[in-house]
Image: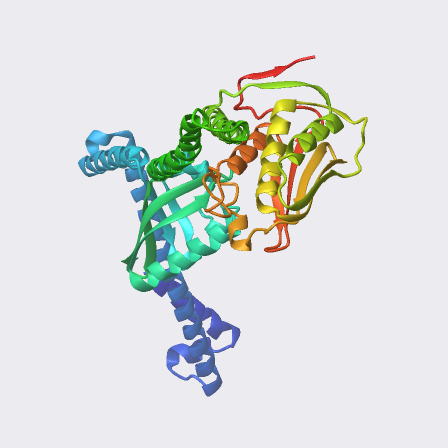
Length: 463
């Protein structure tokens, strides 16, 4: 009604301003006046439409405010809103279930993780077990990929390649090793699975840490290998010892019987020399066996004192000069006559003795040289001969027990093994250079300041 009165008032005012009042009511309206009236009517229609729109917006706001007030009231008076109370109970139950699920997932003894394939394989989940074994906190990995978490580039590339294979194949199962931030190696058995959910693709992984199991397996394998090697060495030892002991013992027993039946003094002297030589061989054999046993059990004593190295070499050359056969000479190279070191003279002479003994056995012409010189913090000894030499294929095993250059030459094959063990106990190294048919040179070092490896408990310094 108000709009109608407003409409009539506007028309009357328009007519008065145009001087057409009488004409309007009498029905006499000019063409110009008619156009003005139409414009006025259109303007009023537009204003009416705008007013209706504003009214609709106002009604919506009132409804929203009313709904908000109702929700606030329902929140403050739950008994007045049964639906909201039920909803809150359901939310509480879901929170309890999620908490229980987290407890389970974080305490199972396996790695569990989840990656977003569509977001550069970034982690969405990483359980506590994974964090405990890897040493990487689970809160620091969410939203990161392997390249942003791990430090070993090979591990990262392998993880990414496995992820891509899993996406392509759907499932992947394998055993792998990886480095933790502390450079600890962990071994895991992993199963990765692709999971599709709508437009999203995820990768779920479960890994069993088998590091301890693998370590036990390796220890068992090593123990079995050692037991098999020990059994092989025992068999070889018995076979070699039986032969090596029987040979000189037969000579001793046989010539002991003949010496009493000898008809001349010269025969008795010859038989006595043979018995004496084989007795020395037998005693040396027993000494080697005892030394090998003491070295392996860690019960060998080392008595260290100050010694003059030139005196030691002179004694050795004097002893082995009488054992030379054929056209062979033995010499001491130019050395420092006044050089003193702290060491076990008996053990050093034993090592040099084994090397000189081998040189004498396998050298029928030429010369054998022994010498020494300082090298850094060590004293380097060498024994050089012009004998038969050693084949390159045998050079790597020559210091192992029962390995012999020539099976027909008398000897147990444990002399060089004893040399290696003695040198290592004293903190040195031993090696050789040889050309087959052109002789050999054995080297070994002894520290200038005496020391014995830590597993040697019976160490004593005298003087």
